[in-house]
Length: 399
Image (cartoon, rainbow, N blue to C red; front, side, top):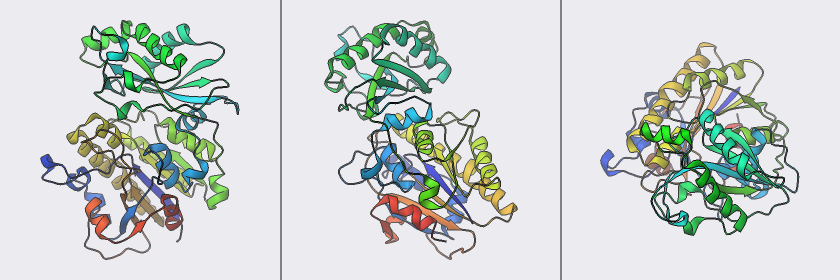
C-alpha cells in the first residue's frame, strides 16, 4: 500500500457573496475531487491546537503526525533546516520576509504594509536585495541566509525568542504598532528600508508595475527544532514535495526525503506537473509515503483574490490529483490518498484562521458509495471530526 497526502495550503475558506454564497473549494471546478468524494470518506479535522496561533508551521506538523505542543519550537528554525543553516542550540532563527511597504513622505513608523510577498518576487532578484542588506547590517551576531522567493532567514547568535507579528496578519495597516519591541531588530528593519527603497531592482519593478521589495520584516522566531524520525515513528519511508522552505525543513528535521523540482516556486504558476511526477517517482522508487504541498491557495488568500484562489484549487485538482491518480491506477498500485488544507486562509481576512478544515480520504482498494461532495459544508455535515490534527495520519495509515 502506498500513501499520499495532497495538502492545499490555506485552501479552506468562508462562503463568499460573489461566488453565490459558496466557498472557493465549493465553487471551483474540480472533476477529480468531485468523483473521488463519491467513493471516499470525508470529514473535518482541527489542525491548530487550542492556544496556538494558526499557521502553516503548527498545522503541517499536525498533519504529519507531530503534536505541535510537544514538537514546535518556532517557524523560522524549521525553514533554517531546509536551507542548511548551521544553527547552534543558543541561536535564534527569525523569518526575514522582504515585503512591500508604502513609500509616502512620512516617517518609517507611519508607512503601511502593502504586500507580504512583494508580488512573489523571484529568488534571484530577492537574493540580490538581501545581499545589499547583508553588506550593511550583517555582523558577528546577526547573519542573513537566502531562502526562496521573499522568504529568508536571520540567525541571531545567543538571542532570545521575542514576540513578532507575521506581516500577512497586518496587511494595509500602519507598521509602527507592529514593529519589534527589541530595539536592534526594529532599527535593522528601518535601515533595510533605507537600503532597499531606491535599489535599482526596485526602481525597475515599479516601472514594470510590480510591488517593490523594500523592507525586511522579521517574525517567526524560535530555537533549534528537535523532531523525531518520521520513519521510526510511523514505519513509513516518506518524501516531501514542496517549494516552501518551511515544509522542506520539517522534512529534513524528520529525516524524510526532499524532492527538488525545477520551477517549483510556491506561487500560482508553480511547476505542478513536475511536483506530481516527483511524487509518483518517489512511490515507484522505495518510498511508502509522499506529502505533496501546494502553497498557491494560501498565497491567493493572502492577496485577497477570490478568482485566483479558485484557480489555484482547480490547478491542484486537474494538474496534481487527477494526473497522479491516473499514473497510480495505470501502474496497478494500491494506495490511500488524503486531500486537505492545513488551515483556512479566508479571502475576507487575508490571513490564517484556526477553524477546522475538511478532509477527503480515498482508498483505491475500498471504494465507498456516497452522495456527498468534498467541501467545508459537507465535511462538517458528515459528522466525522478529528479534534486533534496529529491523530489523522494514523487514520491514513490504518490500512
